[in-house]
Length: 382
Image 1 (cartoon, one colour):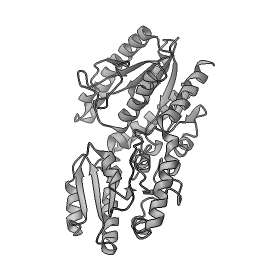
Image 2 (spheres, one colour; image 1 turned 90 degrees about the horizontal axis):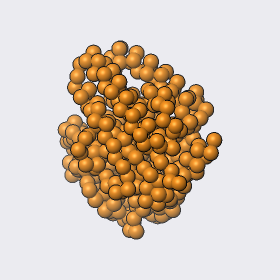
Image 3 (cartoon, rainbow, N blue to C red; image 1 turned 135 degrees about the vertical axis):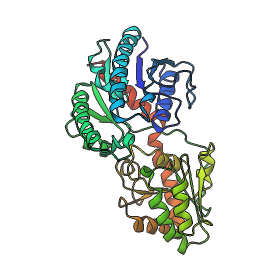
Image 4 (cartoon, rainbow, N blue to C red; image 1 turned 180 degrees about the vertical axis):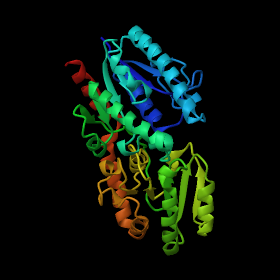
């Protein structure tokens, strides 16, 4: 009999990391493991998923539209949220009772507050895609007033209470797992690679690459400052940043530092493999991450990585000095020094790139998928 798995998350039309990773896993579960897979959404009705899904996957949209919360005054957010939560709880309960999944997976969004109380017969799993320290920052961008901070603390207390009731709590890294010290029902399963191309970089082009949204979280302001140091020593190298979002303040910073001829702020690209393969170094300058997929993606293309050892993920992915270089978190001078080290040591750069492509194969979907298959089987056997 087929395993029946249901995932709960807000939407699939946004080109986000969580959405992409879930799509990779869901396609593997449906096409290779032949699970009967359901994805239950609250938002984005009639919007096409950004990443291509297997035709075998069932999409259920409960049409709650939590997006109405955005832009509302704080007091109004509370009222709208409570009303929509009541609707969501009823519709999700009815949906799960109808589907009768063996396992229901919450991506730790709004359903985590009540999913343990839905008596549909399924085992409940929680899966978190950001690190604990910055979980609320994903929504508030680190700027909360007193009442938001108070609610955030109460919310975290309630979250931990609900996580403890789950059959299993899954984190993406050992580092992040350690931050949830109150939880004794957790395991670590890394994100899978989205690709492992036949071609790779020869690490000979005088180009450094960075990828991510143009937000405070990604630390491009620190990277631009570091590049100001690098560019003075290596005038024949350039840095290209690819991403979506508002580039204005980063453009102003670049121009203020006089880096227009060596630093290019590009839009998001649809041919990311090609961009990796024409580069010789990837830099990750994030202030925090959940599990930064740009690192294993670059490694899969034979590109060594220089990364801040930010929470969480880089320390779980990079073997420092072997397939990449870790930098003290937020240390701009050291970031510049380690970029320069790889620029100035061509043989080391190539060796690290080759080693990166070998080491990163542990993140291939067939390896990560097997971990999930074993986890599901274990949960259902208890």
